[in-house]
View 1 (cartoon, helix red, strand yellow):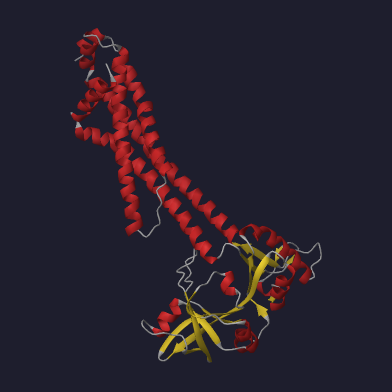
View 2: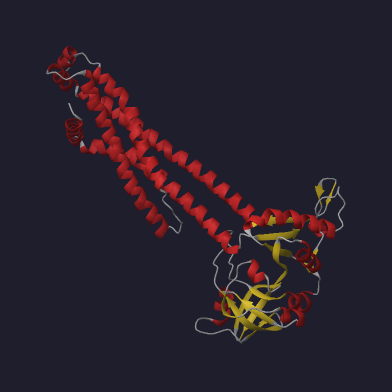
Length: 406
């Protein structure tokens, strides 16, 4: 018996009980859909995380003060050794692998324009901050080193601040807003960056010269953080080591003293988030793969029932010349057809579900070709594995006993 004839007989046999065949395939369909969708959400989330972190600048290095330690115990937050503007200037001078540095001071304040109010955060930074954080100017311009020296009261605002203070259709360039009690001239707006990976609105921001915010609003020489940008992504790790060595010298730390600052990079954050996303994706895929195994067990169960129901038919075929190999091949092919049909249906539904999840669920999804190939191969192997025992049982039937079976 050739494959073509066997396939026709297999489809005919399965077609006699369409609903039962569909229920048998359902486990495989659900399993394949689950695997494809879980993989698509995982890859989409990973790509989304990478895109959001890249929008912040992959060369970004952040230096923050940390609490002092005594006897291996962290002291309270008030014990943190503050970073200074001089630390930022020292790093730019002493670390050859960075090309821009900016201290950052921030404070929240009520913003006013006309009769509109909005509470936001004003950050005092160097002009280089725009390069470090990959901030693009939509309209107007950024402040300069001259503004920095003269403590000019100028600022650049994000889209959220613009929308809430000026509303649609109003050009904010050249207009004056009050930040607290201090008037700031708006000289530029920033291209919207949306929310960060942590859900923070990156457009709810006002940027002004560091010296202006520090002297006119804060009156302290402490800085909240220092941001630096490595010359290339490949220089990030080297830059971190050089920054650590330079700051230890600047802070006069002895060899046995721990750092009183913390250095983090976007690459570290990206690697950590990707590891978490990959782990979750693998766990969800394993759970989804269990559905495939359950589906395979369902195929074996139905094939055993089918062998019992068709015992006389099998006996008749053996009586007219069919060998045990022919019978086994025939039933094994039916199991494979069931599994493959379920697999292909699952792939199509998986693609549709991933599209709907992306369109209406708000999740980024990327269907990788390998997840489709793996689903197809696995569904085929399940048909072979779980169809083997029932087909072997049918092949070993005694023709005479099979013909007498009631």
